[in-house]
Length: 178
Image (cartoon, rainbow, N blue to C red; front, side, top):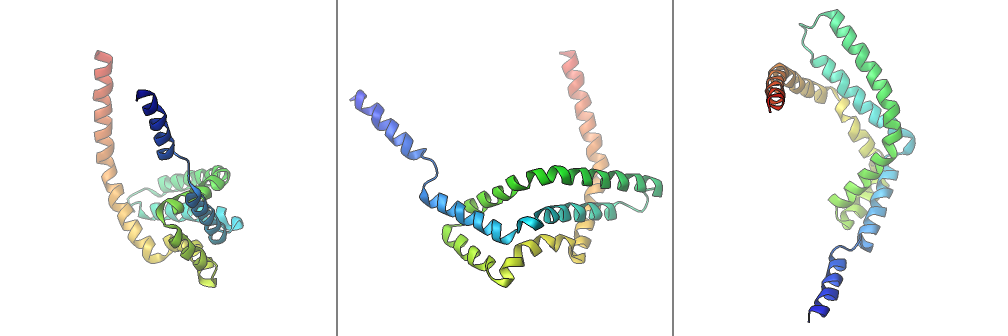
């Protein structure tokens, strides 16, 4: 009986832990096609870079007026330099990011939903919907709301910094004492 139990258990284990089945593979292929159709390869760097630029601009706009102009200029200059360097790094990661979109779509939507989305992105409206949706972050209404949020969060940062610093010092002192 025990001799039979091991092969049966192994068989059950392989069934349960089986790699993606045909439905998952076809769903992933469909999701990859959606990504290819909705996010044209030639526009992907601009899409990701545009989001980073918009977020950076909104963060800078949210910085209070009490920041001295010289400090603001330095922060803006260094932020712009960082963003430019970051876009070079980003360009190397775009293929993996786009494939992760496809995997996320496969995991989030049923195959029937993916077919509907695939049909939609093949229409004139659908072909630009996802690319243009990413740009909503640049819309003045969104930017205003986001800047208000960022301003409030930034006001909380000094207290957070103090708490983290205090806890880190206490932790490191305890480590040195122990």
